[in-house]
Structure formats: structure tokens, C-alpha cells
Length: 256
Image (cartoon, rainbow, N blue to C red; front, top):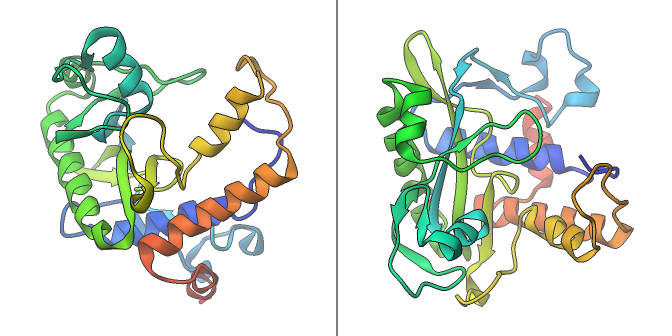
């Protein structure tokens, strides 16, 4: 948890999730019911407008479904150490940010504190039970659809995290979908494998924190105003590139 909030971050995450929930209904069902202020029951509407959703209640699976199309982050670290990512043996000689031949699912546990832990698909299947394959296939289909959807918008979706839950016996996409907090978004026009990439996501803040010398022991250091402003700009650029809509239209939509 950072001491300074990023202005409009909650609205961007909600707006992008809403966009993808609607765009992927043909891929799988999700928990979204409404985002309009008049539909939110007994809540401080002015405070939550633009950053709240009315959703179906679902029982979340105890696993995050991370889909990777590129080798970055913890996937890159695991590959350097073992040649594998969550049990997937990868080709030798790959470099950081390399594209993978096919996207892979690399599950992770949901940590109540600290960092999530990467696990194998076999371990994930034990935690999720009989619905694991359904959720895994949904995650891959969602990722492939999203990659194609933004191919001509100058955005590379390097990886993303999906969460699923069960409602009335049906597996649903829940939580958020393809946001800067759950994904790595890279600008396509400067993508060059062999190192870290510029991004439209929270990696910018992570990098600043690492460069600041913080040892990840709470509390986190204060973010400089220019880092806060630059992070907000990146989040809004991600929304506008992906949706091809001005961010200002989001508040018009939810105020109905």
C-alpha cells in the first residue's frame, strides 16, 4: 500500500474492466451487472461514481490465472533460475521480454499478505477442483481475444491476471479484467526484446520503488509528485489507447 493515492486510478481500473467485461461476453460470462450510479444501492454515490460496480455474488477460486505471452516479471526470474515457469519448460536462450511461441497459464496463489506465489498447473488444479480446466481455458481464450483486439492500437499485452469464481454452478470471470494493475501493457512501437520495456501499468511505480532503495518492508516511501502525475498519465493513456475513447466519456456513462 502506497502513502499517496494515484488520482483517477480507481476510475481507470473500473472503466477498463467494464470495457473488457462487455467486449468478452461472447468468450465467457462475468459477474458485471451495472456501473451506473442510479443502480448502486445505499452507497455514497458521489464518492463511488465511476469506481464501483454492481456484480453477481460469486465464490472466488483460491488461484489467480496468470496468462503470459511474453517473458517478463516473475516469469523471467523463474526462467533464469530454472528454465521453467510454473512447470512449463521453455526453450533455452530466451531473453527478457521475449515473445513466447504460445501463451501459457502460470497460476499463482492469492497471498493474504506479501507477494503471491507462483505454482504449477497441477497444484492449481488441486486447489480449484473440477472447474480448473474450464477456468484455465477461459483465461487463455480471453487473453488471445484481447491480444487480437488491441493489435492495431499500438499496445502489447505481455501478460495479465484473471480471477474466476462460481455462481449457481457457473464459472464466471470476476474481480477486474485487463487493467494496468492486473496486466503488463507495453507500447508496441518501442518494443525490443532483451530487457525491461516501457509500460502503461503499475510497473512504473514498482521500478521507482526499486530504484529508491526501498527494501519492501512497510511502510513504503512517499512517491514524488512527478511520479504520481506520470503514473496517472500512463493509466489514462492505457485506457484511451485500448478503448479508443477519451477518458472523460467514462464519467458521462456512469452518471446516468
